[in-house]
Length: 89
Image 1: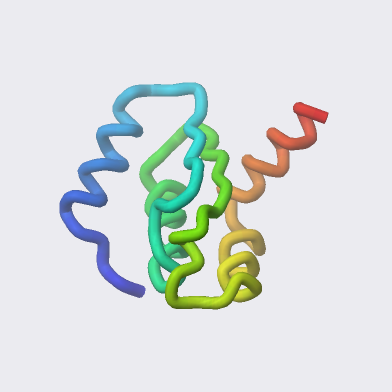
Image 2: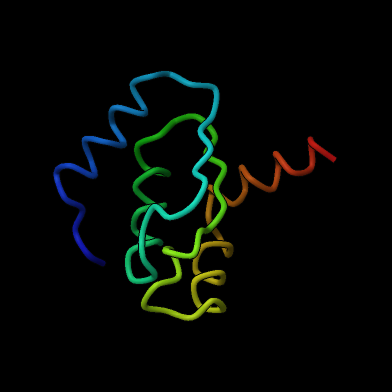
């Protein structure tokens, strides 16, 4: 896995320090080779639920199928999003 830059870690820590009830990531936060690591960073450092959708940039350098599989299977962030979707329905 690619190590995170100091700036990326600082960005997530600043968001986490805001003590928000939840965070919506609206896509284009990464690329295919790094999306799993970036979402894992949010999972590790952010205590509130994180809801996300993938943007077109998140697929760059990979296939749609591979990116969806790595971001949807077994992710705690996905579990938060699934719970949110159930509440909205």
